[in-house]
Length: 236
Image 1 (cartoon, rainbow, N blue to C red):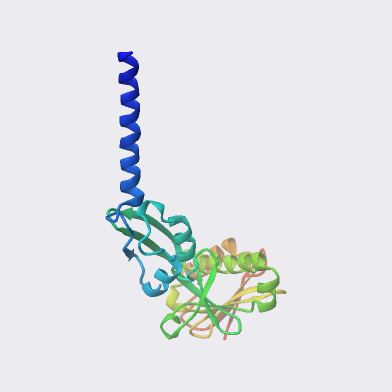
Image 2: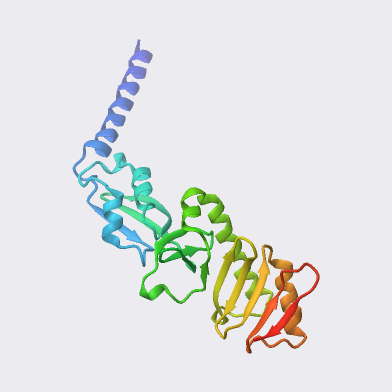
């Protein structure tokens, strides 16, 4: 009997302890959500992020739906991803990683695009110092968003290859134009043109060979790399 009494007392004590912990976590007035700290945001407005998080003030900190808050925050066009953590006794910290614009896409206006080919926000006056990708059909973007994204991604790959292999700097590049029949054409700020077609890496390497052999792209030329075998260079 003494043994059973000890077991019963231990069980009752454990349940009482769990009940106290549960009350402290859920019912205690000292562990209630009161403050949201957002870090890592530069372009994403903090007031907008707080609204999107929709965390109810006064809720027990352990009961907050942080997953739902993150889903809301990640709806902001500048937010690439976010993480959240509780800071006892009364705060939540949301850490934001923002998108980095690498180019502009011209549709009915200019839109920012990140390195993954995602169009995420309309460009403002301070966002215009990027190469422009033009020629995409806005109707195609709506009807076939995944195809449009692949076209944008291919254009970004071409721009990166032109700089890494073709000997061009970002400051040399004005725009990249897509044509459904001829592919991609790079326009330089000095008026030069480089036609690459639909595939880029090997042809951009050919451009690098031309510059190594004396082609000076600081003066306007039209370089046609669309052929698989030859490059045609014409002064402009």
